[in-house]
Length: 275
Image (cartoon, rainbow, N blue to C red; front, side, top):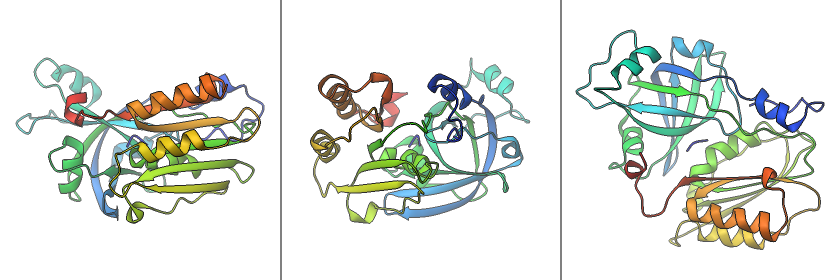
């Protein structure tokens, strides 16, 4: 869902690398250029426009906030960040955050992957019906997860909501990187290629009707970690990542600063209840 280039900075500290991947976000008024079904429950939407000719990608797990205004709201033109702020007293958009799957600067385009949760969900329902030419307004990108070229190993884990961020991050790792990946999806049909130059070992976990997050949680708890101060990045349901964060930091003794686990959704809550 929500989904950055510091590899060559081997002489910089971790903190310097972290802030080097924080280019400021901006409001982007775009048009949908292409809609492509990747798997039965994930679609890729390509956005383009004049605004994106100046888009500065932060890479890895960067995300943007999509703006959804009520249909009766008439937006001023040109629509700018100042115009959006001026509308707030009378027209406040609902926001949904999505990872940038890939940036194509030579074409002025950005790809985002959407998990299709159902037509009754705000962003998912929009992604199921959107067509080329439709307008989309979003703000970003956010800061990005900083890759450390000195890390002896990486562990990436998540469910399908984390898949765009995992894929984007894998694509940035160098051939010297060693990485283990755990990804829980509904079934085998939801697997997709994950190109990377890294030495990557990818395990696809198929729920096949089991409760979301249970397989990922079990596999992550049972996984033997390599020696050394590795890095962990993950995103999934709130209860799952809370449990795993405690496990890795408290039980396995990993540095909290090296364990980046984020809740991308909460069981029992719809997207609309998380506004």
